[in-house]
Image (cartoon, rainbow, N blue to C red; front, side, top):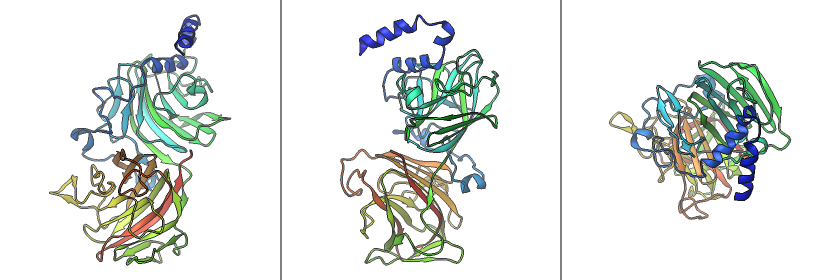
Amino acid sequence: MIRSILVFVVAWSLVPHAFAQSKFSDAQKIIRGGRTNEPASSAQNSSKPSTKSAQAKEPPVLTKDELAAGWISLFDGQTLFGWKAHSEADWKVENGAIVVTSGKPGLLCTTVQFDNYVVKADFRAAKGTNSGIFLRTAQVPAMQDITTKCYELNIAPPDNPFPTGSLVGRKKYAEAGENDKWRTFEATVDGPKVVIKLDGKEVLSYDDPKPSPRGYIGLQLNSGKCEFKNIKLQPLGLKSIFNGKDLTGWSKPKGSLSEFTVSKDGELNVKNGRGCLESDGQYADFVLQLECFSHAKNLNSGVFFRAIPSDNANNGYESQIHNGFKDGDRAQPLDCGTGGIYRRINARRVVSSDEEWFHKTVIADGPHISVWVNGFQVTDWTDTRKPDKNPRNGLRLEKGTLQIQGHDPTTNLSFRNLKAKEINK
């Protein structure tokens, strides 16, 4: 293997200089950067965030229309929560943007994988910068992955074989020009089709004969300074799991004391407890989105997932619903906080409020679980426990049901627009 790489590097040195500057050489630099999982010293490792990293003060504001359409923010404008560097580089946050200037070529990746989605990001590149946004990528992609397994949406000068707006090694766009102003990418990755917009204009459409099912989103350091901000994503392909008319697709296990009804406005209401309403469908790796309304202060509920079917004991992972916080500080949640994983990790911030509708997104990707509330990521957690059938006792990767909890006799919450899908394998 080493001999093959040496032969390739020697051969590569013989090609013309202009082609050597293409993003195939970028992938080679990623390999040389090493397959390390350790982030740069200046980057915040989302697996072990510092107090400063975890406590973003005010979440980025998504519009009501964006929230209704299922958009989530991948960058809070203050920290690298939800991201992890895979080479030693000076990734940092400055003036509301993710900035990188130097270090070993490599990627800063989301900590969770996505399959089909629309992603938007503003970027600004210094003159001569060679960077990019990787889509459906491995954390450390091999050189051949760029043309076979992932997509590199390039940021590069006009003299590069694949200038800004191109998909490296797949399809070229040559009209982007070069400037050091803020610009906007929008990429739709849906099954085999990839559509790229630059500054609101569609510039490229590509059909992949052998698309990869899922992967991370990665921001690249190759050469030169690059900045990224306003990074947001809309998962695609979710289907309604509540019809707004009756409890079709759901059932109440024996012994459940909770009352579940459907209002004339199409809302699912739960009162009393202890009990739950269980989905007929089962999910392993999935995306779940819903809206919730707590009808009084500091009520307690939750959504269980990968739960043991037909088990009224709520034996699953619990995405907590509790909007209380201590001492007027939303960074100090009461009883885990909405979006936390109960008994595992607290929400880093209580974003939602009682007596107001709020949005929640839960993504389970193998042992990794991420949760957004009103588009703001509050949880980024990996279950490192030993495997166990019951998630209360250990790691469960098998399919399980969704369960809406009635916690106690004071419970009075409503739900609407429940949607879910399994993530492609």
